[in-house]
Length: 293
Image (cartoon, rainbow, N blue to C red; front, side, top):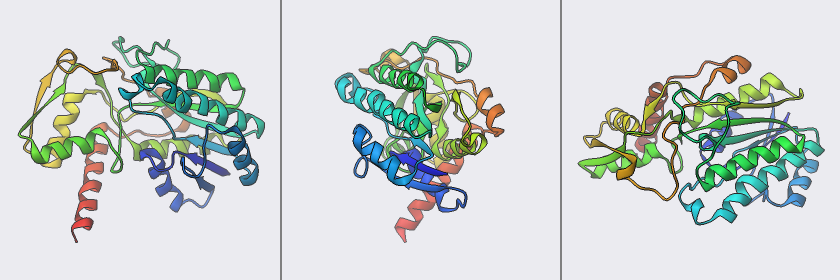
């Protein structure tokens, strides 16, 4: 299959590039804003025609959750309009769209993991624009897999893990909210899950939504504490409430996602969150050692 990747320089796109290096089954086309404007219908159509695209994995997104409250038009353009453009191109060329969405489409008031068909109720501009992107994809009539994820991190880019490790170098103590519960996702694991979905379905007709995170559920305070422990930092992590750490955009208090559907469909085992965190931090240590040589 000829696979188009958008947003290839982000955390998830970078992990897909690593997979492509050793993949003998597919042809990969990696693009980002500098090589393909996915808000430009003409450019996207030309890309599909020129490269015979069979599937598109859309890793591009506006993810600055608080900033989105001040830039709703830009967030809408990237998170809602661009997926619509890609979906229409996939419909025109009988291609599959794999689109990455978010736990922020839910209201955050649940007490058990959200299933894929549970009602959505986004509480922020970011969540609303991602929910609208999902709706437009479904209405396009294209073959699609929408994959919701949460708390994404990796060894590249800006993310919670790298921020905590950096703070652990300079701070004796930090405050982290302990009343928001979810589960982290290592971009490496998500990338392999997406390829598993793609290979399982092939070019068959499909209109499905899935959830993927690592296994387990924790608070941000739990996550930060584990990062400091595994990273060998002496920084103390103090628990605080959401009220003590106000943000412009409302965060879901509970956003654990039910993973049963993707495990059954793709036939995959999903690693526990701590095991994956250990592997990511090991990778970061290895990268640091290379830089110091």
